[in-house]
Image (cartoon, rainbow, N blue to C red; front, side):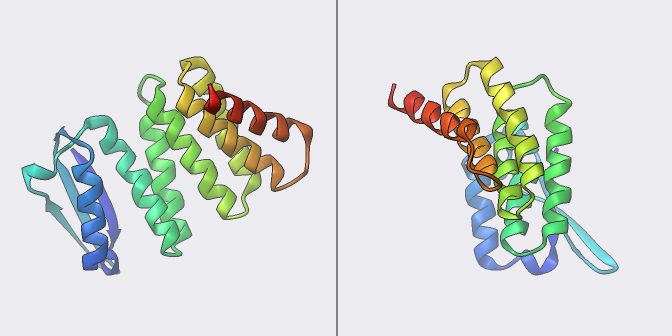
Length: 171
């Protein structure tokens, strides 16, 4: 089963519709539960079978929730959600989902001005994408790695990464 946890105030109609859209775009056989929390209380709800998701995508739901909490300004919840997602994905055989999740993590960390964290996540994504020979993920990893580097310095390796990403995208 997959569980998406969020603060109770997150359950606005717009957020619910956004979650439905995400779930619908990753159909599968894994049950999804939503936990809404507020100080001193938490409610766990099982969603209808029509919202079941692909098992690997279920792990990414935590990352998606983390990105959403980041947008809402709750960095601590976002970081906890992202770290848990990465731990779960790292327990599986290395794959594209982990590489893409590391790219998302690097982008979020850059947005928080955590350039060391962004550089770490993006270099891990880049190494994994290279190993997997997954061109779209490699392009994304090159871009986020270069962005993290350029936020702290104007160096040639970052420019080379961007040029390589462009070259791969044009192929």
